[in-house]
Length: 249
Image 1: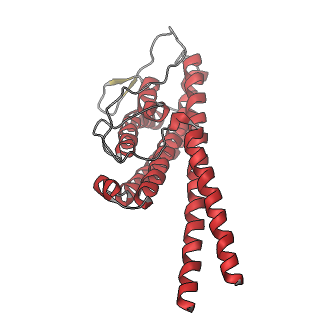
Image 2 (image 1 turned 90 degrees about the vertical axis):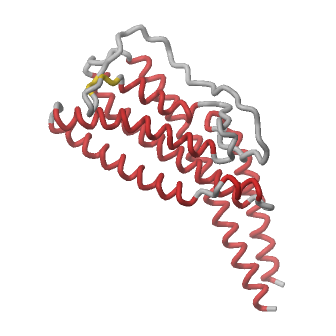
Image 3 (image 1 turned 90 degrees about the horizontal axis):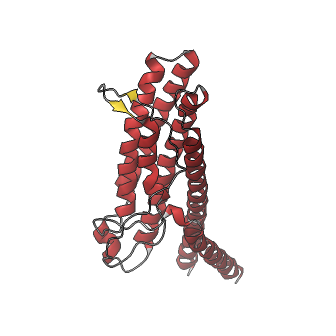
């Protein structure tokens, strides 16, 4: 009897966490983390982040290939996927948001490679150290995104499943991918602040506005992922209790 009461307590706790998780999925609209649609939906244009108008001149750095790169604009372009309010997959696939996160990451890499090269070749010792740490962070992000890509369910599995487990798994992994890419972007902006402070890039208002927006988006997604992890842990605990009770019968 006590075992069943304990199980009931766990179930109620899971229900409460899942309710909180569902609320959090709508708490921060900019993250676009929500249950994936089971049916095809018409494509909508994505709402892009609008930063403060800044009429200062663009600032370019040479890329690894020797091309001019406006790093700040490139980072903004890579992060727009995480700041859009109503993104819908162009492919109408339930994993479309996850794959857009990978596309955003690829765009961020262009900017990251550019400032890493600058830090390694042109900067003082402190910039070289920051460039080395940023390179390490890029590699850690790459490894994490590979693992999430391998783990995310196929779109067909999500759409054909009779339960919500693949939905939950895809939503959680999408949040992880978003959070990994946003954290990389924030590390890049920390490095890029050198160009703002020294006056090499005079678009201070644009930089500060965008950094605030991406920081806010990261905080919302981090909360979402944390609640998803708690729910997954509680569900696993409940499953173990149910299995133990069935084996005792």
